[in-house]
Every structure is written in C-alpha cells, then in structure tokens.
Image (cartoon, rainbow, N blue to C red; front, side, top):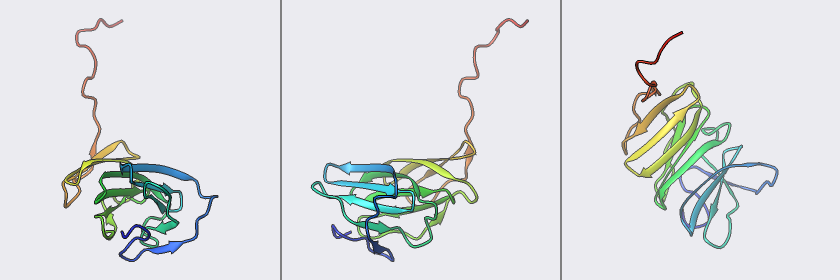
Length: 151
C-alpha cells in the first residue's frame, strides 16, 4: 500500500456509489478499510477515501463479508466462499481457503498472530499468524443449572 493503491495483483476500479458498504475496520485514525458487497475496498487516509481497489480478481466473489485490522500492517478479509486474504502493509496474500464451502461471516484480529473467524454453520476457527485451525462447532459453555425440577 502506497497510500493510493494496493499491490499484488489488484486493480484500481472506479468508485461506484451503488455498491453498498458492508463492513469497516480501522487500525488508527489515519488507516481504515471499508469493504463493499462486490469485494471492493476503500482506504481511509485520515483525510479522504481512496478510489476502489478490488481484492485479487475473482477470489473474493460475493464481497469481503468481514474485515479486521490489528494494525496498519495487518488486516484480514474473509468472504462467503470460506476464503481469507491478509494485508501485510505492502501487499495482499493469495486467498487461503480456510473454511471450504462455508460462509465466513465474521472475523476479529486483536493481533497479527491471532484471529478468530465464525462461519454460517456456527463453527469457529483461529489464525495463528501462519495458518487456520480446523473449524470447530460452538458449544454451550453453560448448559444451564443442574438439578432443576422436572414436570
């Protein structure tokens, strides 16, 4: 990222006000990403928004469903195809099919070495800085009180 364009196979696109912004992630007051339903990303510089930048053509079909930025040099985008793409401050990674066949609908990255994502099957998976874990089902941590009377 040089302040006006993405590196690594992306292409600059004309802004389209008809594409709804679906998510936003900010690492600072001078760096935010906004994603739309077509997989286009706009970048906030602290004073203005960039024109659209498409995440690696075709890889984020259906849009970037969720974004999370731990810093200006680490952001994660996930989509409905189970793909995840990392922004490292200078380039985008190739898509990682972290959860094949599932819609990754949420991601949160408090640091570059830990992210958690959720899919549409109530599964969770984690990123350790280099790879995604196997999806696991969310289970109730507190199934309710024991010894309740039955009728």
